[in-house]
Image (cartoon, rainbow, N blue to C red; front, side, top):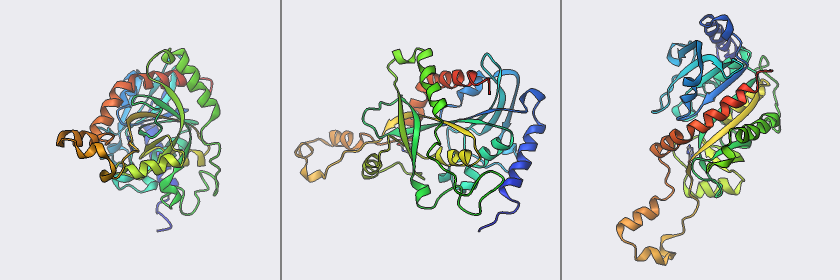
Length: 317
Ligand code: HPA
């Protein structure tokens, strides 16, 4: 299980050159890659269509196939914003809970590196653990808890891929300060600070999924300092940092992961509740996939405008 043949580097090189051969000259060197999380793929429609190339993951050699409902799978290349910044958009991603190996979950990130990407903007839908967060709020990540990674489910486990980076990469600087500042500025420029939706900075806990967290797990993660919880993003960020790509990560709070729940017997109010009241009480905070997609649809426009402005301002890269 130690070596993969051909190596990840060889496969990523093959995939990068396959993609390049499908791109016109002006799109050959995307400096920015954007990973669009659940319901956030609408950015693909705002890309300048002259020219724009879409490649379905299923037609890209060595790429993992997305299996989740509501997640498309395609790579979109085009130019974004007034400065025509060439970008690579990943609409849909491979998740660990789908059964992909960590190597496959992070494969697209490595392909981006080989195509010359210097900045990656990773978006996701996440559950809010911080009680000050409301559904629809946006969180600029400034740190993470790699819950799966800490117990050995880690994308850099195995012989180090020296072609990408060093054996023991630091992650203390993973969330690029300059890019985070740009998020706050863009938020103001767009006038989003005058709206109901709020922007936070917070810590993302990565869990393997696919179950949503129990209440006890939510309390544990909150106790550890996490503000949001989700099933993606951190593997990509780890691999991006390994190879020196600068990282910006944005979470859309699509549900609030509920923390409270006492033993039923000790709760006086529960004794006199009707069945319907009891169901409503126990159902509170129960995460479901439909709710996640719905909140995504509503907030997606603001998130897209935010990402678009940040990318436009990165034209000097
Ligand atoms: N937990 C984990 N992943 C998620 C959640 C959640 O509550 N919401 C969206 N993705």
